[in-house]
Length: 180
Image 1 (cartoon, helix red, strand yellow):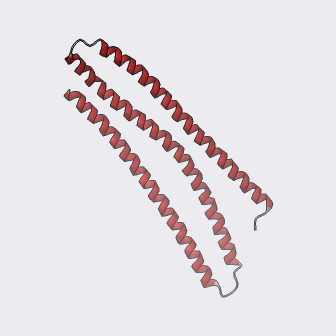
Image 2: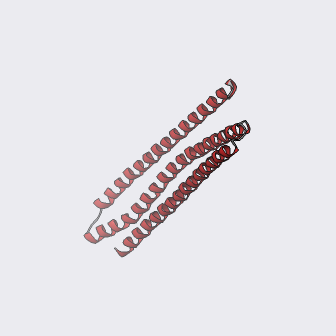
Image 3: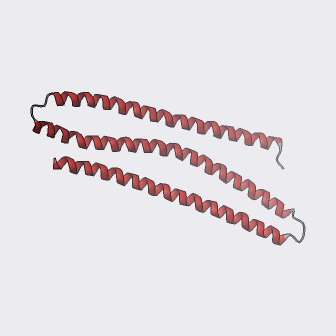
C-alpha cells in the first residue's frame, strides 16, 4: 500500500501539474487577446486608408483597380491570422497532451507494479489466472498506445490539410486579383 509520504508527494505533483496547466491556459488566452487586438488595430488602420483611397477615386476604372488591389492582401492577412490562431491553439493543446501523456504513463507504470506485486504474492495454482490478467492488462496498454498514435496521425493530417487550404486560398486570391 501507499505511505503517507507517497500520497502527499502524489497530491503535490498533481497540484503542480494543475497549476502549470492553468498557467499555460492563461498564456494561450493572453496570446489570443494580443492577436485580436493587433488584428483589430490593423483592420482599423487599413479601413481608414481604404476609405481615404475610395474618396480620392476619380472614375469607375480606378475604383475597380483599387478593389482588385485590396482583395489579395485581405486573403493573405486572413490566412496569416488563421495560421496564428491555429498555432496558439496547437501550442496550448500540446502542453495539455504532454501533461496527460506523462500522467497516463506514470499511472500505467504504477498499475503494472501493483499487478506484478499481486502476481508474485498470488496463491499457488493461480498462475493461469494471473497470466490471463497480465495479458489483458498488456492488451489494454497496447490499445491505449494505438489510440494515442491514431490521434497523433489524425492531428498531423489535420494540420497538413489546414496548411494546404490556407495556401490554396492565398493562391486563389492571387489568381482572382490578376484576372481583374
